[in-house]
Length: 113
Length: 114
Image 1: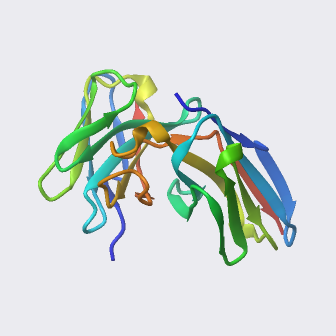
Image 2: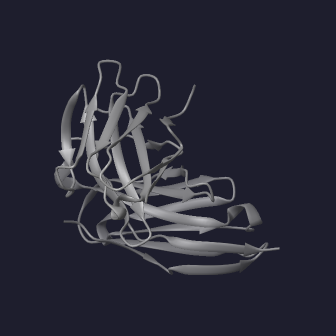
């Protein structure tokens, strides 16, 4: 099956700092999403981004599908950005056959005041 | 628009028992999928239902089963619970059809097996 690797595994930031999280995947994908898992366990959808660049406030994401990686940028980080960030993909072989996300191991982010 | 709703949120079961978890998808969404999250294995796909049919299945034993009703609500069942089944169980919904739809998750059901 498809492999998804995220780096770094842990990230400690001072409030106000910028950071970049990376997601590498081993094969072509139809779907790539970034999620933020809050302390209560809920996965909050940040971006649906199988290719291209998107921005939402202080967060932005870029996926270079041909090179099989995606980046999540956090600018001017706040303590509320703390949590675990996951990248998840749907393998291209799943096309027309539904949703079956494969998750990376996550990046645990701690933003200190 | 209400989000994905999962019940119960927290539960404790004894080894050998069985458990049923419920998920109500976002209105209009026809695809419901289930995931298990544990500290050791991370987030793993269990199965996906679309229009009452199981469309995809992960690598879990037959003790894990699910179903979807005509109103798209879904249930998953775990029989003969083992200690290793302690996990956060997450339900997700999407508009369905083909892949490429944004997937939205519920708050999850925390299961502890003692």
